[in-house]
Structure formats: C-alpha cells, structure tokens
Image (cartoon, rainbow, N blue to C red; front, side):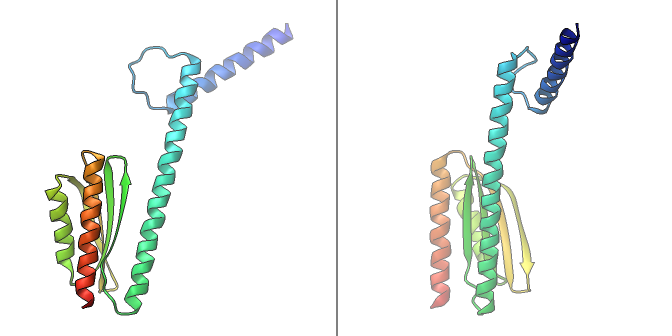
Length: 168
C-alpha cells in the first residue's frame, strides 16, 4: 500500500512539473494535445535556440564593445577615422558605426546605401561621446542573405574609402 501511494505521488508531482515546463515554452501549434515526449522535445529545442541566441547576442555585444574601445584608442591620437562593424542575425543586420562629430555625411550615406538595397531600417540611434565622437547603431531587416552580403560589402567599402580619403 505504501509503495502504491509513493508511486502515485511521484507521478502526480512529475505531471505537475511537466505541465509547468510545457507552460514556459511558446507553442506554434493550436491547442491540440501534445504527447509527453513531444513536449520534452519541444522544450529541449526551445532551450537550445535560446542558448544559440544568447551566444550570438554576447558575440555582438563583445564586438560592439571592441569597436567602442578601438574608437577610444584612435580618439586619443586625434584620429577621427570612421569605423564600422556589421553583424548578421538571421534576416537582420546590426550596424555599429563610429564617426567623428563632423562626419554626419557618413551616417547619411550609410542610410542611403541601405535604402538602395531595399532593406528596412527598424531602428537607428546615436550617442555623442566626449564631444568629438558619434556612435551610431542601425538595425535592419533584409529580405534574403544575398541582400545582407551586398549591404555589408558596400558599407565596408564606403567606410574604407571614406577613411582613406580622410587620411590624404
């Protein structure tokens, strides 16, 4: 009798835990009943996707910090060379652009290139650092990977050319 009671309580507790786990996972399908192994598969895949997204975001954060630190180094030497970093995240691009305060044309040209490639600007903002450096961030949605590649190539070429013409 005790064994049956203990086993029954264990099953009830496991059912409650499975239900709690299942409630935390977003569902794409309708409210149809999903078998327990499928629920666990779905939860496992969801956790893996979250981990991958977290890693991508950490890499992007580290990249943006590196760009900002390089900007601080170049500023100490009096150089206002524009710098750009582009990260592809699925069908989106995140652009970090670091320019001198009087280099607004670089931001304008960046937006023009993005529009020419028919990408959608989701968000664009800037911060002024030490009255002589502007740090821009631009978030885009692109239709297909080839568009993201073209935008990256064009922007890198433009910033490189702008930097080269600034030095001479």
